[in-house]
Length: 232
Image 1 (tube, rainbow, N blue to C red):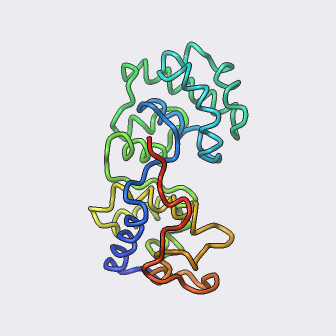
Image 2: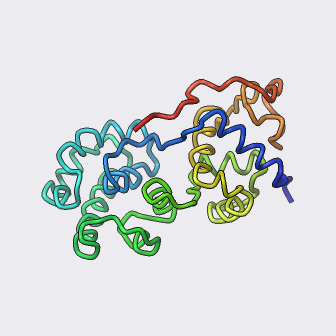
Image 3: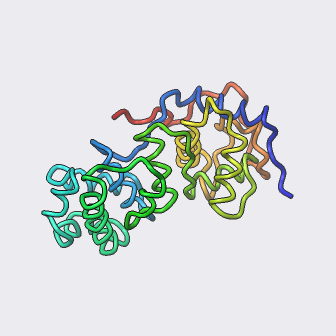
């Protein structure tokens, strides 16, 4: 079985990540719960920057389910052609917009089952919405979170569901709300997929990943570039 961090070390890990990014936020641009939901749906297999470039103009003219329906599938598609899987995503955005109007009075539901019943919305997307909009302690596991959790020893799961379950059990309650952001941003800017930047990593001495690249950074390492999250 892969080596796992103790709860004490897990708490120290989160404390350091929280010190580097005291106010972590999503890097997806949004103006209301609906636009966040759409942005997260569009972010599957796409970068946040790429999604933001497409949704900037889109959300200026369609920031509610009714406006999105008026724009139509072809209109949505025209705005998101730079995003991977844009045809299917345009179809899902229009379908989920219709569902919100028909079943939820045009509002984004707070219930997980209702969210996951929307076209194009899976557990990861539901977790992001529940956390970001409704303040619930959930951890959405994407490729960055999956990698960082397994590398550091926070989790040793082989599926997103296993990793999520282990993260929910080892993450201290006081760090639960920011855990997703801390892990995803750490994976995006420091714990890179091909070559993790261990020398400037603030949790390198806690992390169980071997072999680390070059020397281990000291515990009191300075914040890495991109440390401050974007403000909304």
